Image (tube, rainbow, N blue to C red):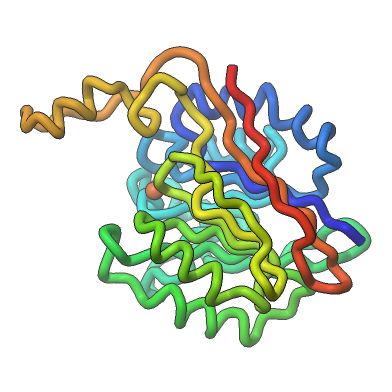
Length: 259
Ligand SMILES: [Fe+2]
């Protein structure tokens, strides 16, 4: 079958959650989406609470992925152990709660493996190698197709991961930088790839936060708490069309809404 998988960029704050709640359902209907993965690590600005995770599931996510802000709302820790459909990066050291890889049932019983990884360049050098973690997890994975959210800062590291997993994963997308990239493509061995999905949050902002907060940082002002920007929001995502028999992505394209 041709599986339509929607990957939604980092949901930022109340505005991001609101547009997701209002618009995800219609997007899924319009594009015949069978399975939806949403990066939720910025639902609280930094981090996500169990209540916010439940809200993202109610909005239509099948799986929530996270990233470098996983532990900023520490109340999520226990929830990660209890709820199999929320993933944190798999290459955290083994002592933290939760899991970074899950296999979920799609239409017709197709087994969809979802892997969440985090990059190390300019982000967190204290992680296990995301490349070796992927090797380890994919070697023993029992699933029909595999898709990967690679939460990373550097476009180079994200690009390298796409090529590294080409032939083993059918979709690899980047998250974290909140700026959508225009390079969606199918790699030679059938992995659909995009460097970054972008974000789901306020349009007039610096990565979702008030521009003055960001300016204050770069102009050397006293550290201040970041606040979510106000105003209209956008929803950035990519649609991956995957041939589950041939184990290849056949099409990947941006699906964006701006209000
Ligand atoms: Fe992040």
